[in-house]
Every structure is written in structure tokens, then in C-alpha cells.
Amino acid sequence: MMRPPPRAAVVVRRAGRPGRRAATSASLGTLVLLVACGRQPADALPGTLERERIELAAQADEPIVDVPVAEGQAVPAGALLLVQDPQVAAAQLAQSRASLEAARARQDELRSGPRATAIAAAAARVARARSERDAAVRERDRLRDLATRRLASQAAFDVQAAQAEAAEASWREAQAALRELRDGTRDEQLRQAARSVEQAEAAVRELQLTGVRLEVRAPRDAVVDALPWKVGERPPRGATVVVLLAGTPYARIRVPADRRLQVEVGTPARVRVDGVDAALRGRVRHLSGEAAFTPYYSLSQGDRSRLSYLAEVEILDPAAAALPAGLPVEVELLPGRAQGGGTR
Image (cartoon, rainbow, N blue to C red):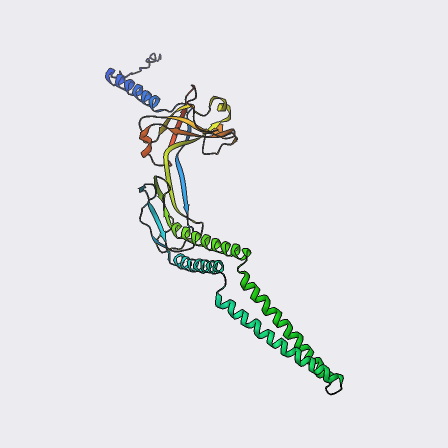
């Protein structure tokens, strides 16, 4: 019995809708265009936005009594930022001023010389010493005569002779003291007194500066970045109590060694900051002359094993003045003539 011939396989193809296919193609094209437009240049170097950091330290081991500013606040040059307790410094200053007055009084005394009454008293002491010497000498001579005739002991004569010598020495001492008063103050004493006054004046100036330094002020226009210490706390001497960010921001990047010859101070650049639509104009203001290994977070995986040079790119657009530090950036170094300025 013959089998019927096999049926031909039937393949059913669904016809796609022309409108949907066209829309899909258009969407893919738009997506590719958007990705291409949003992609950063292949030679852009990543980095961070930085500002000049100013750390102000405590000049004394005193508690904080006032902090009139807040973090993030813009302050002008000379603005009061923090105050430490001035009581101890004020007491030390008062003591130093008293020592200065004593040194000046001593200097005036030496310049004036001895008083007339002091000279008269010294002359009276000379006269008394001379009288005592004369009496001691007469008694010595009398005992010598008696000792010669064996009417007095030799021991009594020796004691009186010693007293006569002591009286002679006292008389000469009184005479020397009188001459010293009459000669007046020596030049060496005046110079010594002058140096003592200068030393006391320097101590007063030092304590005055210490009192001024208890008030921490902004050295230039800046923004308060951090206040690590609060009112009532006692920071040690030298501890950072205020951190300021000053100047216009700049981009800190690392230039790979294979591109080092293409970059110099003044090289123009375009800086793209996350969150800012338009690229900012910039130029290289500093390029390190010493190479270092690139940190793992700085460049792509292929560049991490290479040497790099630290660079700072100054942002020229005024709009960058309001940008905070720490934002990630992409810097595209542009070929062309260096614009000048900066340091290597």
C-alpha cells in the first residue's frame, strides 16, 4: 500500500509593522547620539576641585569662650573667628608691666646718683671708724709699754693689737664706701639698667601679642570650612581651631608621564565639573618637576602603573568662584602656546 507523499513544511512569517520598525531605528539612533554627546574626551584627566586651605592654630592652652562664625560662612579679612579665655594672659601682662615699672625706676635711680644725705651718712661713718681706730691704736701702744715693763701680759697686748688692726680695716672700708658714693654711678651699671628695661619692655610686648592672638582672625577673604573645637573646650597649643578655604578654586590632576612633554605651565585647558553643564576655561598654573606613581583612584586601570606629575589647573571663568571644593572634575588639556604664569 503506497503512502501519500509528505506534506511540505509550512513556514509562517509575521509581517512586521513598518511604523514600529522605523520608530525602533530612530530610538536607537537617538540613544547612540546622546551617549556620544555625553561621553567625555578620551584624553581627559580626572581630578578634584580644590581651594587654598588655611589652618589657623591656637596660640595658647586656654578654653574657647566665643565662636561668632559658622561653617560655610564667608568672612572678610580681619573678621573675628574664635576667642580664647584672656584672663590668664591679662594677669601675666599686668605682672610684666609692674616689672617694667620697677626696672625703669631703678634706671632713674642710677641716673640720679646717690643722695646728699647718703654721702653725709657715709662721711659720718668714716669719722666714727677713724675715732675707733685711733682709740684702738692708743690702747695698743699703752699695752705694749706695759708689756715691756712686764706690767701687762703679752696675751692682752696681742688681743689689743688685733683690735687695732680691725679698727684700721673698718676705717679704710668706710673711706672706700664714701669715695664710691662721691664718684657716682658707673657706666656699666647704667648700661645694665638699660638692658633690664629693654628686657622688661620685650616681655610686655610678647604678652600683648599673646593677648591679641587669643582672638583668631581671618588673614584674608575666605570661607569657613571647619570649626573642630566648640565653646568651652580647651584646645592644646598648636591645635587647628579654624580651617578656611580661600581664593578661586583650581583643579588638581595628575599628568601621565607619556604626556608630560605636551604640557607646560600656561597650557590652556577645558575643565568639566560634575553638575555644571558648560565647560570652564582654565590653564595650567603649576606642574611638578618630580614624578610619582599614580594613585589607584586617579587614572584608568592601564595608567595606574605609570609615573605621573602632579599639576594644578587654574580656572579662569568667574562662575567657578562659587563652586565648593571636593567636586570631581575632568580636565582636557588643549594644545597651543602657553599663556604664561604659574610655577613648575
